[in-house]
Each structure stands twice: as structure tokens, then as C-alpha cells.
Picture 1 (cartoon, rainbow, N blue to C red):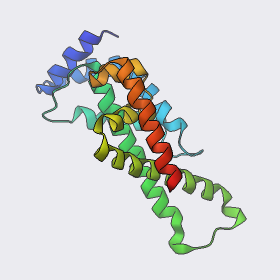
Picture 2 (picture 1 turned 60 degrees about the horizontal axis):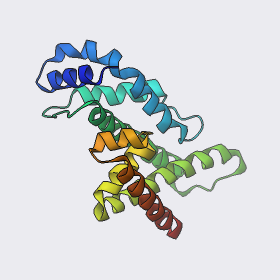
Picture 3 (picture 1 turned 45 degrees about the vertical axis):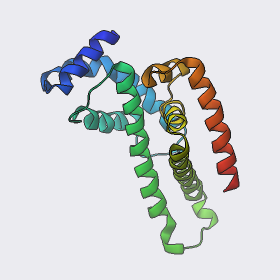
Picture 4 (picture 1 turned 30 degrees about the horizontal axis):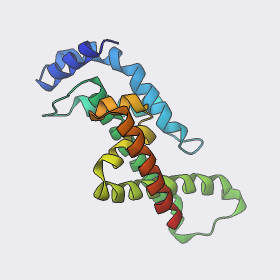
Length: 186
């Protein structure tokens, strides 16, 4: 995929030219599907949201953005990974609410539901910790979003954030250590 072509189409879209959507979609779809697949691999088994649906939901929200000045292809995919993360988080929160059952006790027949609820709870805990990290170090939080939730490589994260790959590696290592300590304390 031509990075310049995608960047130009995104610029045209941001300028209000909705006709470019048909040309843009096939250029970005495969990468969006890869990001969605990466994010869904960490979800509970039997998750009702499939990669295609996640891509479609995120893509529709992305192309409806008003006033966004897309910097480049990497910026678009970075925002896409954040959008997918938020969609999955909304699903996890809803699943946690639905599975709580008003304080009902879990039985062995509900074992699959317990596992699903635990994974949804884990995602919510990670998001809450990431929100705390964002208050302390926004750049580290952004690196975690791109690497963990977006499945972006170090180089893709560096491009999306406009920083060097060694900086991404350093921030990623520090953020992971902080999150490990923070989540371990819970």
C-alpha cells in the first residue's frame, strides 16, 4: 500500500470529500483487520464480536470524524487501534454488567461464564490502570495503546507517534513495568 496515497486520501476525506471513501477502504482494510485480529486474540473465547464487525464499527466511526487532520497513514492506524480498544472496552463493560447477575452465586455449570467475566474484568482493570498511567505519563500510555491494544510494531508505533524506535522501546519497557506493578498491587 502506498503510504503517500493513503495519506492523500485521508487528507481529502478530512477536507470533506466523501467520494474518496470507496478508494480508501480497500487500501486500509487489510491492516485494520490485522489490528482487529490482534486485539481480539486477547479477548475471551466465544467473544460475540468478530474481527470483521470490529473493523466495520471502527471504520464507520473513523470516516465520520469531523475536523480530524490526518497526519499520515500511521496516525490513521493509531487512531483506529484506539477506537477498536474503546469498542472492545465497551463490550467488556457490558459483558461484566450482564454477567454479574445481581449478586447470584456462580455454580460449576457457569464455569464458562466465570472465565468470560474474569477476562472482561481483566480488560477493565487494564484500562483503569492505563488511565492512571496516562495521568502520570501520557506518552507511555499512548505507547501501550499502540503496542498492546493496537498490535503495532515498535516501528509502526514510532511512526504513528512521531518518535524514534529506541524511545518507543524504552517507554514500552517502563510502561510494562509500571503496569505490572500496578496490576499486581490490585
